[in-house]
Image (cartoon, rainbow, N blue to C red; front, side):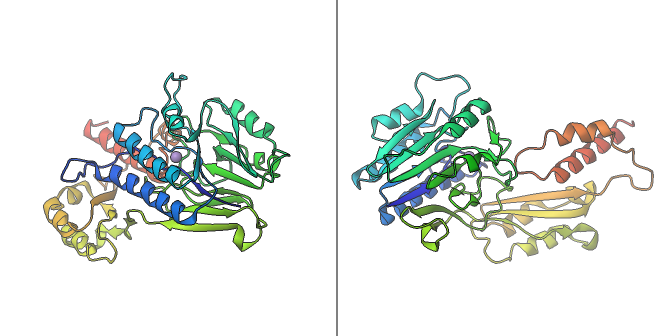
Length: 372
Ligand SMILES: [Mn+2]
């Protein structure tokens, strides 16, 4: 018996200001395209069931565009006779139990959409124990610990949306995100397959437990080399190659170029523009880190010229690492409280050192400006 597992589609997510001729946000469109591509693959693979392990929508009040895309794709699966089961992730779980959850709408269109509390679904020989996200981590851990395979079913799959301690942190720190102890997986190890959602990079924390990851790279913290959905052959043993197959989904490239050392170039505009010739940047979201740059030199970059050089890319972002201004006199050391304050507020997907370092730089500069 074959199933397909996908996750973290985030329909309705928007980013950057780029729009198409009709004014649609291009990144929002990328996410819809990735989901349609995933459904194309599901239709080719013809599994008994497609399982989505949470964050189908970016929020619990999806735009009508996002809802429309979901219903259109669900209809394609329904027409092909493929069951679609989905659990609510942290993104589509309201803080207060909403009367009209978008999932109840999906249910009217034949989707097995589980939210609020766990449910067991049955598809012939297969039992799917679906544990939706809860804003109460203890309740959720309890639901997962209590999950047991259905003895009457030939195959058993558990679906849950949570981070596990000790795994990569992409997706952690999101609103309402829940991180559970990694040992929890061992308590449910008797399931044939554990379909996990929440981490945005492909990961296999246990031989029979997989995070397929998100379908698109939603931030710079997502360094996944490939994006995709997972095909699982439940008749195979987890250690066999046949058990798991990853099918790639092509997303928009996100490229962080090697850092430019500003102290070693005279014409920074020219040096940045030259990087635009790097291969594979067509349509990409590009970041150029610039090391050792003064505020003055950074401010003198000709934005129009580099914009023209990178016109074939969707988006260009400069990431300066400033050398401290006013060198020559001793810098006031950032107080320990500032480091502490910043390190407890590192946004998801950002390296702590970079974030804290930048915060310190700005505070130092501000202190100089006011003559402190
Ligand atoms: Mn997610």
